[in-house]
Image (cartoon, rainbow, N blue to C red; front, side):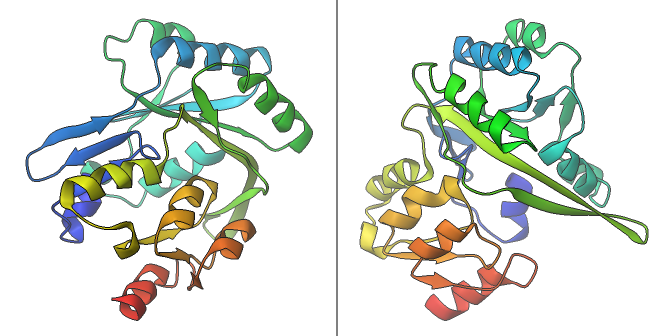
Length: 241
């Protein structure tokens, strides 16, 4: 995120991990963090492994996974066109449980879980929700991404959820910054595309949905703009600011 911020001239704050962390770019320090506790991450890993479910763990600087599949497959595909310093760090680990257990740093922003079968996926979500002090995002639609291989295009389709510490979301992190910067909620524009944007879309003065957003995000938005491949964010900024 720091690399993207520099490219667009953003030099104030970054909110990452669905609101799990706020980073002060100017002073290079973390202002706010609500990480998932290691014992909760280990519980999530155990349940996913017992149910043969694909998952990945996001730390401050890497994605930990067992294989390149679903969402991580797409990140790996994007890495092929990026300069070395811009690539997402994907750490492929054979035994994630032991790896996490022995990690010295306990900075876990979020966990993602994916599967192509809706029934299996929903059953797993019910089991994950029995873990205390975590939030599992509701999922209503299948995520679809396109990967090009020469003249061929591969569609990667899957159900996908994100797990954070309890009460972590983007809007709560934004509220922290609003108080610090003396900005009113009615002065906020939020641009989003998926269920992890729900709270900020509902609470911001203006909610903008990208053209490729999940249907329920479009329904709650005040404005719908073009998709992410058609300069939708620029369209929103030009229209509103």
